[in-house]
Image (cartoon, rainbow, N blue to C red; front, side, top):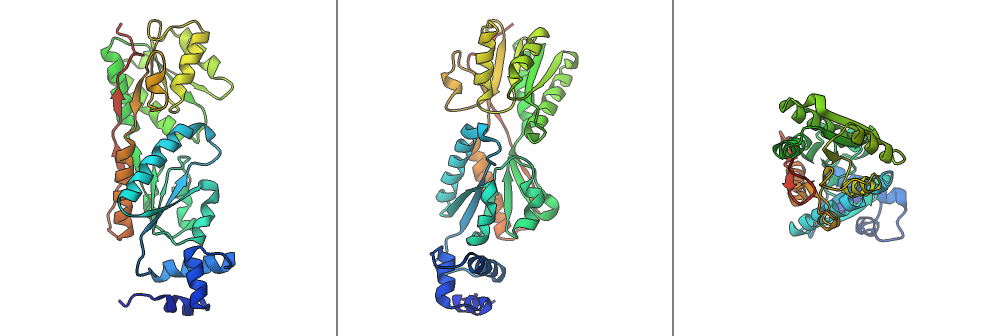
Length: 318
């Protein structure tokens, strides 16, 4: 098939070649509606300039969840490094600004807005390849996911705690149903406890930003010896701080397993034992999958990436 030229695109858009060039390059003095129409036609006709470098759109988490700054920064860094290592360009935008993808020519999109909605609505937003990171896929519409394996991670951590003599274990989770990964983690926690026949001593407490003190107190009332802080990289530090308010020492009085944060976990006192997401592998697998989708390779599948347990000082041997 003959490649689509900029002249072909200008004729299809009913504009001059200069207008098409300005629209595709992001130059000013092109109306928003005209730019959007030209971009749509370029995607539809498969236009690519002779020196085209593929451009990847990266959708950040919604501003609804500002507490996940460390997670966002770490995953964004891993994605950016992988994108540029492969010779691509990137356009980074928040979920709230997703309509801006209609004003630039991108070849594929990576999203790590984790509230379970972008994959479901994507066919109504854009006709571009999309890979969701740590978010729900929509395989019926060819939207696939690369995610950390929450069930494997929780089994890894429960097995570790049980091997160190813990039997009464608490699980602290943010109550929002939007945080579907926390719900998956809870499912994995309860399943792992059942495998050890400890379902009667598996305790779950939900909290919001105003009730974490009370939820943690409820777990302490159940005489748990260890607690999972399940809702993100800063949760373990927050739990350690609240335990100090209760007069509890870590790990002498109670043990903690949190989620790894390179900015926090190794600098807490005691240093915190954590489950760590493999961010470089998440980034690499997501780009592998997106490249297949951009090339039109059929029969894709969702990918799970295993957690790693980082053993430090916050878990006692009973």
